[in-house]
Length: 401
Image 1 (cartoon, rainbow, N blue to C red):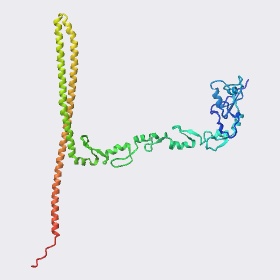
Image 2 (image 1 turned 30 degrees about the horizontal axis):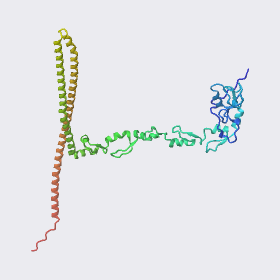
Image 3 (image 1 turned 90 degrees about the vertical axis):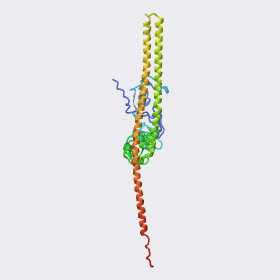
Image 4 (image 1 turned 60 degrees about the vertical axis):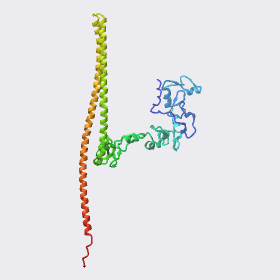
C-alpha cells in the first residue's frame, strides 16, 4: 500500500507571496527564488519536477486545477506527468526553508537600521517596522507608520473629532456646519452681554432678558425702533405722538383701499350679472323663435318631437348659466366678507386711537400739573433768594445828627 502524499501547508501557514529581494544583505542565489513570483521563497514547496514555489504561490497556481510547470517549459524539461502541478503534488522543502531563513537580512524601508536573519524578519520585523510606508484609509495620504498617530490626531483632513461642547462626533471638514447647529455651543446675549449661554437655552434667555432689544409694538404700522424690554414703556410714552401719527396714516391707507375696492368690486359683479341676464334672455328668445318656426312649417305630429329635441339644449344652457351666476355670487360674497373684515380692523384701530388719545390727555394733564408745581417752586426760590439778599446787607449806620 502506497504511503499517503504529504499535503501542502494550509493558507494560514503561508498566506503571503515571497519576500522582496532587497531584504538580503548578501548576493542572492537563483535556488532561493520562487518559480512563480520570482521573489525569495517563503515556506517553500518542491513539486514533483523539482522546482520550488512559495506555499502561497503554489496553492494559487493549482487552485483552478492542474497546471503545466512554466519553469519546466522555459528550461525545455517538460515531461508528463511529473511537470504537471496539482494539489497534493508537492511537499514542504524543509532544507530549502532552513537555508532561506538563515540568510542575513536587513530592512528595506528607508531610514530603518534593523538587521538580522530572514527568519527574524518574518517573525518580528515584517509589518511592524516604524519606517514602512502606509496609506491613510480616510484621506489616502502616504506616510511612515510612526507618523500615523500624529496624522490621525492632527493632520488628516478627514479625521473625526468630538465636539468639546456636546461631545458628538463629526468630521473636521464639517466643524463650521456643526458649530451652527450644536445645541451646547456657547452664545453671547446681544442685550446684557452675558457669555457662554448654550444655544438650546438662548431663546429662553432672551425671553426674560430685560436688556435684549425687541421691535416696538407699533412696528406693524411703521415704527422702526428696537428698544430694550425694560425701556419699552418709556419709549411708548415718549413717542406716543409719533405712534399716533403712524397709526393714523395706516388707517387712512386702509380707508382709501376700502373706498376704492368696494365700489369697483360691486360694479364689476353687477356688470357681470347684467351680462349674464342679457345672454340668458337672448338665448331664451332664440329658443322660442326656433320652436315657433318649426311649429309653423311642419305638421302637428312632428312639432312635439322638435320641441323635445330642443329641451335638452335649453336645459344645458340654463344649467351653464346658473353655474356661472352662482360663481359670480360667490365672488361677491367673498368680497363682502373681506370688506367686513377690513371694517372690523378699522374699528379695532379706532378703539386703539381712543385709548391713545386718553393716554395723551392724561399725560397732558400730568404735564400741566408738573408745570404749575414748577412755577410755584420757582416763585418760592425767588422769595428765598430775596430774603437771603436782604439779610446779608450791612446794617445802616446810626444817625449822628
